[in-house]
Each structure stands twice: as structure tokens, then as C-alpha cells.
Image 1 (cartoon, helix red, strand yellow):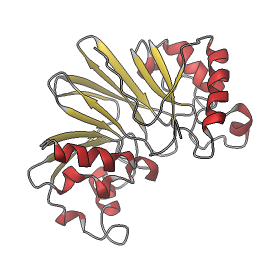
Image 2 (cartoon, rainbow, N blue to C red):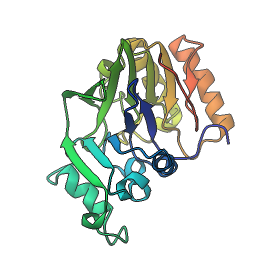
Image 3 (cartoon, helix red, strand yellow):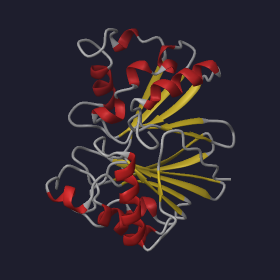
Image 4 (cartoon, rainbow, N blue to C red):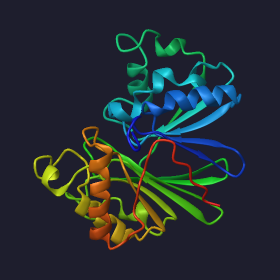
Length: 251
């Protein structure tokens, strides 16, 4: 397996060493174990939304169980319930054996929508995107460099969705889950077809663009076929496939 594996989770380190985590899919378990081994005592966890594939690793995120570690949650208010209530409901019985109130870490919660703030010297902007339920994309900027993270987005229902986040970013990680044929029977599911991925890339003109949020039914060979198509549709031979363990240096 070259590309698949865990569900969405990306670690970002600022110049000051601040730890920012984008989404908490299954990949956050292994990341959390490493952060505990490094004795990290503060984590900024930015959630795009509350769908299970983006939060299912939370109950196994080591820093939450370190009484000396502050885990700062950011994310959109899911519905009539608060971000804290929804996370607490997931990391509690009957879905999890330990009630969230007994988790020994020191979590805080900040609800965001169309907002800007700073963490560890990094300027963060959240922007709503087209996806079932309240969902945002994130743009992180520091020292004139920028990363855009839009793992779930359906430009097929709104051609401008995600463009503002992607515009001029040095690196874009963007949903590219479906072929055109697959998307025809999945309209409204909240994800991008390859032509829609190309629309965002062309309009946003990021320095580097990565196809992200791969469909779990796609083999490595299928993804590489989709990569060829994406390069043709964008007119950019430098389009890349995100993969497990990918490391990027924005400096």
C-alpha cells in the first residue's frame, strides 16, 4: 500500500515548535503516541467537522490522557449541541469506555466558522466549505508561507467552495475522492470529483496541490490512474497524491 491507510490527520510544526494537528482520524493514534514520547505539553487540534472518519482517533490520542497536557480543540459548532458536547458524546459510553469528564488531560474548546486567530506564531483562518453538516477548511500562514487544508469539499454544488482557502497557497491538500463516473451517483455526499478538484486548483493556483481524502475502495493503481486524469484536467503535471507518512518542509 503506497497511498491509503489511516483516515484524515495531518501534523504541522511551527517555527517555534508549536504542534498543530489537522483533524483526528485514525492517524492521530500513532501521532499521539509520538507526541507523548516527546513530552509535548500543548497541542492545537483543528477539526474540520465531526464526521466519524475525522474524529474517530480521539479516544486513542495519548495527549488527552496526560494530565499535564493542554489539548486545545477548534472546530465548527456541529448543530444545536456545542463542539464540546459532541466530542464528549463520542469519547464517552456507550461509544467509549471512559466518560469524557474522567479524561485526565486538560482540553479547551473554541468554536470557529469564518474566523482568524493565531497559535504558536501561525496565523489560522477557517472558512466554511460545501459538505453535509457544518464544515470548514483551514489556511495556516507563517513567515510568508501557507498551507491550505480542505479534506472534504463538494465544489460540484458550489464552484467557489474552497477557492478562497486555496488561493495562492504554497501547498494545498484538497479532496479528490471521485472519478466523474463515480460522482454521478454520489452528488450531495460532500466530496469532489476530479473535474471539481481541477476547478479549485485552477482558480486557486496553489504552488503545490495534493489529491487528498482517497476513497477506501480505490487501489494504489486506481489512484495513480486518477492522478494522470487530474494532471490532464488541471494542465499541471506537478499534481501529487497525498500518502501515508508524507513530509513537507514549507521553509
